[in-house]
Image (cartoon, rainbow, N blue to C red; front, top):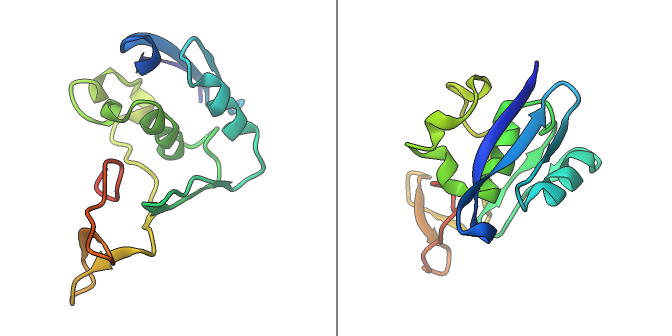
Length: 133
């Protein structure tokens, strides 16, 4: 357990890298990134934190201490952080760590074998941030 500094591009400032300082022992976050206030609210909220959306069902049990759950906060702030070359800039605590599991939204269409199709039940395409991201 340690303090991890992540330089995360900030879309509000033209993708300029801004700091996200995560203390995984204390379960806190500080820094200069524009999304720090909502990250702090999520970490301070009663658990589990409902991180569901129209595309997914997700409850975070301990995002302040669990790297797989903290990744959701980083992904929400700047989703390309999960892809190279940015992924390799994350601190070692994230090495080999995948996002904590989620369930696709109930509206997600499935084929005859139960596999997700990438569409909602009404046939419309799922957008960015869907179950593939």
